[in-house]
Amino acid sequence: MHCPGCAWGSGVTLPREKSGVLLLTDNLKVGGVQTVVVRLARELSHRGYRVGVAASREGELWNELPAACARHFLPRNPGSRGSAATVVHLREVLKAGRYDIVHSHQRGVSLLARIAGLGQHIRLVEHVHNVFLPVSRKQISFRGDALVACGSKVADMLRRDYGRPADRIHTILNGVPDPCQEGYSVASTSKPKDRLKIIGIGRVSPQKNPEGFISVIHNLNMLGLEFEAEWVGDGELLESCRKRVASLGIPNLVFSGSSNDVRSKLANADILLMTSKWEGLPLVLLEAMSLGVGSIAPDIGSCGDAIVSGENGMLYPPTTNPEDLASQVADLLGGDQWCGWGKESRRRYESLFSLDRMIDELETLYEGAAKT
Image (cartoon, rainbow, N blue to C red; front, side, top):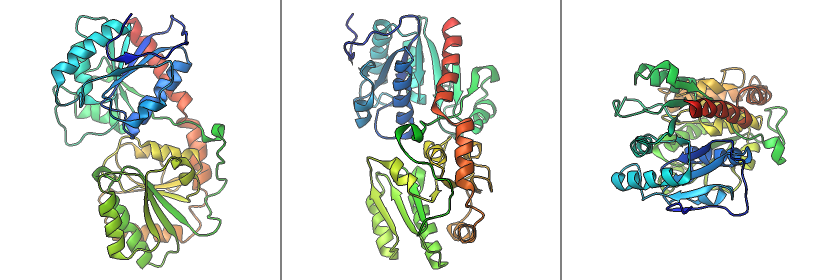
């Protein structure tokens, strides 16, 4: 059967007893949501599901999908312009692809999937990856048959701010692969071997607030803390941040741009410092935990699901100014009370944030959705 806009991998026979799952998102550019989609495609294919991914052609992560996964190329910017064309195209994909479940990962395309699936026996699982405040598009948002909240605060938002019924909300904490299975070593202590290394990781974008990171590092230098700092990631603010670092004369901070091995950079750091303005349950925080690296992060979104202040990291109020935050960080890292953070981070990761646990819980949800 020909499926419009798709290309199946060849030579792979999958069991027919499992559901067909279409993973739907805007694009496959490098980002947290897109990383989740790729990991789900790999794991679900490995477990015997018929899996497809639908998004615009944008993004290098298309190349990381497994051979057994169908590719469905939607019109560009499916969540904004061209919505009618996207609905028509999605409807054709759903008819031809024999999918039982659409697992959507963004609000705009979730609504389009709901419209495209009218009259077909398809269940919409809507994955919510962020806390959206202030409340917007309340009446048309989060209308999936099942809503997956990636953290506890996301679930609270869906109930409290969007009025979604509790029986449709399923809190399934984000999970990340175990780096030990890929040959990475996990730190047994957070004590630096030589010079303290502070790292920031993420898109150089307003959400991640790299300017705040620069300000904290600048103030740490003024307080006399001995360390090195690096921000890993690309984005629209990269050049302006590099110019800001140069203008302030910060000798121990580099914005190194994108990397093909972010995990190694994180593994070689002592502390992950996050300065984001909003988050859901950020993958980089869980990656740090999996590698035995302690974290300092704002108390936003569901960061509190991962960090217990004083045990495996530090949460700070998001309104804390850079000078005060730098003072707290300098006091903390100048002592040794943080040296057990790495070991506790790894223990907490193993208990709560493995990728296998996340996939197991999603499988249970799929099975229930397919029967309704």
